[in-house]
Length: 320
Ligand SMILES: NC(=O)c1ccc[n+]([C@@H]2O[C@H](COP(=O)([O-])OP(=O)(O)OC[C@H]3O[C@@H](n4cnc5c(N)ncnc54)[C@H](OP(=O)(O)O)[C@@H]3O)[C@@H](O)[C@H]2O)c1
Image (cartoon, rainbow, N blue to C red; front, side, top):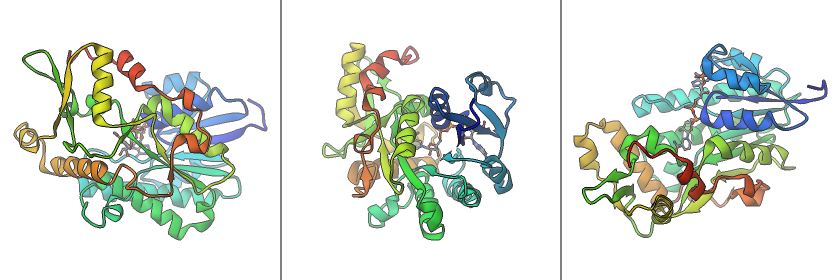
């Protein structure tokens, strides 16, 4: 590490998005990396430590700890954790975490060149008030707007990435997993609308770092990127899945009654339904004309995941 190296501070370094950023920056010359976790002694820190990442304890709920963690930062990658609590409480907590990051980052304008915020679009705004319960989008949109309104000097140094739909969501949310039918074929859930907007699929453990690198290196700040590796319909995704695995598959609309009888809590049903309605009707980015695609902002497109390759590598043994 040379004394002149720039410092990037990566929130959520032990997680999916932040881990991608920390791993990519560990391969780039001219940078040192400070990864933030609540517990630098946990096992998931070991590979980061071995890759040369400095691990520092801080908590998104504690603005003073973030202030200390941002000391000397030239770039910061910020991601909040929405959690798995009833959604209104989760949104309030997430907005507060976002504000904590903003308040702490604003104290470091003397060293900071670029803050990159992982965010999502304002679904209530872009749907003209029709979507009210897509709170894991709207919480992020709210603190993003707070930054733009209240911290103009920080906003001049900030760009945003609206992360797309994780390809791995079928593992995190088992009710989204392809379901095997009696005849051996599979059913994937979809919004059910043949005119649905395309889905921005993303493989965040690989792709996030490349999005962040492009936004850090871009001469302009104030940019918003839709973070995806492939922008395709659910039907196209299912066709790739089916061809790659050599099994028959089709899509069926999300059936809320089935999910309800399977015991999904009301708040999760509500959020799932509205996320699906919003992204299929207005699009993941709400149709915001300011949102740019990775190739428009200098992302190394060849480095991003190909959906077919991801399907091939993924372990589907639990459902096949
Ligand atoms: N699933 C999707 O399709 C999708 C799409 C777009 C956006 N998102 C958003 O992605 C976000 C999650 O990002 P991810 O997938 O990278 O998360 P993740 O893999 O679950 O990791 C969460 C990270 O946040 C850190 N963290 C959690 N609470 C913290 C706290 N109080 N203080 C400091 N660090 C804390 C954790 O660190 P430690 O535990 O080590 O402290 C961990 O590194 C959510 O906000 C979600 O809404 C998801």
